[in-house]
Amino acid sequence: MSDRDRAGDGGRTGDPGSGREHAAPRGPRAAIPGHIPARAEVEIPTKRLVLHGVDPAQAEQLARGISPLPCVAGYPHADSDTAARMQRHALEVDNWVPGYGLYLMVRRADGLVVGDIGFHTPPDQRGAAEVSYGVADSVRRRGYASEALVALTAWAHAHGASTVLAEVDPTNHASRGVLAKAGFLPVRSDGPKLRLRHQG
Image (cartoon, rainbow, N blue to C red; front, side):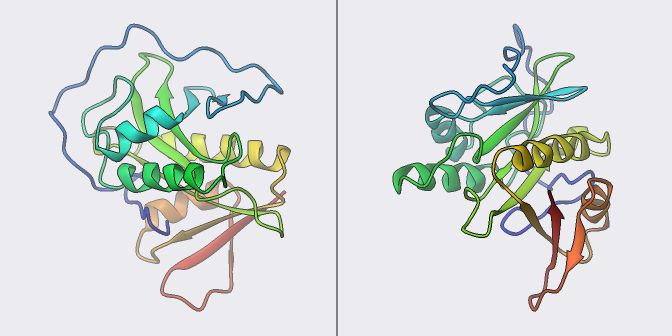
């Protein structure tokens, strides 16, 4: 997926971590429908997850390879810092729109972060925004990436994005499956990666 190509359940191969999971006192608070906070704390609930918007302080932690919330083994993964730096840059150049940044995938059952998903930038003049995602190796192939992608794509279409784009390595069959399951269709691409889109 562009800078954050994925394997397995859309999850990238990353730092194996400590090999243990960290206990969490509680998960993030429930989202308020139609409410967009002043900073990056948009939350989107799914059946098994809460997509927790990363705020500036949390982005700084992720950029240093530290999870801002309790997490499963192997998180942050190899590309979490790249995604966090993209959000930090958007804030620095005042090109940040609430909801169009990075989200932590927080598992409802135990409050642990299992991966992340987010947009590179807000929608452009055509109304297009590009998404990428990844999950920790320890929780791959459980459908978390698909669940998060479906929810975030629906959120984007309801908040100004007419098109959601994604890129994937042609050999990454698992990630291609995640995108297909979420309704993304291939479009013409001159580069080495497959480009797909979801129309609102």
